[in-house]
Amino acid sequence: MPGATATTTVRGPFDVAVVGGGVVGCAVARLLALHDLKVALVEAGPDVGAGTSKANTAILHTGFDATPGSVEARLVARGYELLRAYAPTVGISVEETGAVLVAWDDEQAASLPRLQAKAADNGYHAAELLDAAAVRALEPHLGPGVTGGMMVPGEHLIDPWSTPLAFATEAVANGCTLLTNLHVTKLEPGGMGEATVLVGADGRRLAARFVVNAAGLHGDTLHRAFGFDGFTVRPRRGELIVFDKLARPLLGRTILPVPTSHTKGVLVAPTVFGNIMLGPTADDLDDKGATGSTRAGLDGLLEKGHRILPALLHEEVTAVYAGLRAATEHSDYQLSAHADARYVCLGGIRSTGLTASMALAEEALALLRSIGLEGTPQPLDKHVAIRLTPLGENGDRPYQRGGDVVCHCERVTAAELDAAVTGLVPAVNLDGVRRRTRALAGRCQGFYCSAEVCAHAATATGRPMAEWMGLP
Picture (cartoon, one colour):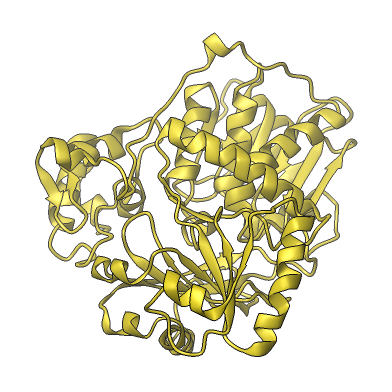
């Protein structure tokens, strides 16, 4: 309208606005963008995949230990199939290691047949019970006291950084509008047949006929803004320790604990990047921004790690980090559709959200259709395909083909850095560069290469080097 400012102009109306640029929101936006729909992906932060989605155990779960009959069990199983098929087509690294669930006392060993039966109830029939000798033959570096185990050959490693990025990139390539730094603080509900206006903290306004809540830790807040209740997110912090690549020969596959009703427990797992990871803890908090590590949490992990894989504690630590899971008072996902509000909620998505993301996208589309959304898939010849550079150690990396290596710990080339900051969904800070290339994520944590990384980013984008360095 005449005289409107940039902050008061209403963007849209879009057919669907997806609120939340984590792995679930990006998956939903991708699927919707492959239909004849006008889609917006709204993220409160400066980049996609930069919250809970980047800080997890990076396991492609079979869902063998989910609660049979739950929504989570159904969507994890479906998501596993979808993501395992999708990943190699777009450059998401997957390493097929399998996992072994280890019992450390007679009580845990006695529970293994029940867990095998639970896996079968979930449709997973490949779990195999092992005696203590068989477990030790598989993983000779395990600590003393193993009493039995269960092999779960389908549990694999996946790159958690590239997954939301691939979804978001494909969404944008196929017409989705990505709006970052848009923290939705208020709603102006439309009447019947009218669009809902989402209002950002900075005054920006976005109109959409339908809204999908994939806001993760803040999903309950958005749910209440629409006038609904039913769940409260109380973040569950998981702290993890990442060990140097020299530790990798200690482990052939993921070592899973016997789960409890509260948590899957502390595991020791390789990563697709070549490290070994120990964690997570499980602490229920009230602060949705408490992503710092704690002395008590790390000490507890080291104590458990000493029992599981004693030699690991003689290796160097590369990094520690913590992620917050969107835990609620319910044990299952909180999914709902509300026709009058033209609103779909994807709430309470915890650590299995990475694996379930593509199935959650299917579920969101079905729920949207159930409340009136109309949209047909675009013809296959109209789809714009994308491909990222795989970051995993089990495939070819760009440095092997030559080029100027800038980050020597992770062997990242200048061409990779340039692509990361100028791509369709570009990195806008060093955290984004790290998740797109592995630069700064290695042994020195950027001590030697950060200045050169910032210089390349500044040259490629035209932004001052000081901005990339985080200086005022």
